[in-house]
Length: 491
Image (tube, rainbow, N blue to C red; front, side, top):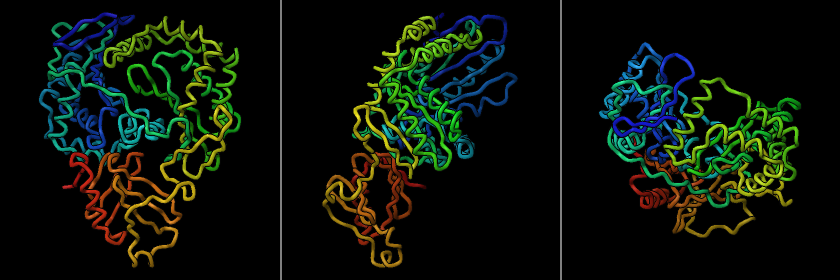
């Protein structure tokens, strides 16, 4: 791995195994997880604005926003690659925000999710609408909330020389410059896990079944475990019983030493419980007994399947770029393969025993799997609604449905709100409760006289003053409690 710099930007390169065009990836260590609910979508908006003046070119080029990083990619002659990189840098020096309406229209008709969206719901369950948990909250209307000033501010913070790395599969072209805005690498904090969520299962508004497991950044036993679990579940649920699609696995960087790994499959209608139980029971079996000798040998053979030379080079460059961005210890390919080859069944079992203590299993609504913890107790549910009878009613000022709505609304849709010192409680017709803590509100949108609140658990709640008697007082309490920077008003 060769290292140099251009205009203060780190440049990493390895020579390609044969002649051909030069490939370049200008990578910034910022992605969806670095946004907040009010700035959601700003990274993709910056990326789209940067690519607008790049225009049509005679060589391959593209860009992508991931959960952890944003990449601008080109392949061509050294002169073509240099021209592309200069165009990207110049756009970031003077962000063309006069194109913001055009960019917003483009993004509203594109898929708003990022690359690994199938693994997004467990992240939302674990972190709420913050950091990695924001991935599931991208919607077309998020882009229209941004003004030119907010986008410029986001770019000035995250798209800087100190937060950039250039990777090349050949020597840097003569005269290469990267005149990016001056700025350091932003401080990145570890996202906070929602209390009561680790070691539980939870309903979410999805059509998939997903299991989130945490591991160290370079942990061979975790890689072996997730590969083995994926193959077992796929063999049972897809190959044998034919009621799910193939299992997919996704990895997300929690911090420089920790990964969140998500295994996901989509069951056919009516098979949600069965899919969830197979996934969880196979995970429990790995924790108790580890993989078989055949499974270990199959995984070792899988890791030693030699990719082509170009893929191997870019895998190495990608790991080096990640190490540069996030301070991850760099492991070369021989070291990784050696770690996999020496992993034992006991190593895998010990990893799964640890991982299942704070795992999160996410299932669709109306799916109620029967699951046990590794110690034989019932696996708890961590849904954000508290069932009536399992808790005392929350004390506070009650706001009941106004008389006219109470008469004209079916009884099973009746509900009320309870105003407390710390927030609001929604109480439905069955007297189940859902908290909206003022301190945990991630975003509040004005909707005429009403308010749409993004709560700490990730739920969107619509409050309208006409729903309840004295509803104006309820809205006034919200307005007084939510800080201005978390409020968005359509103009």
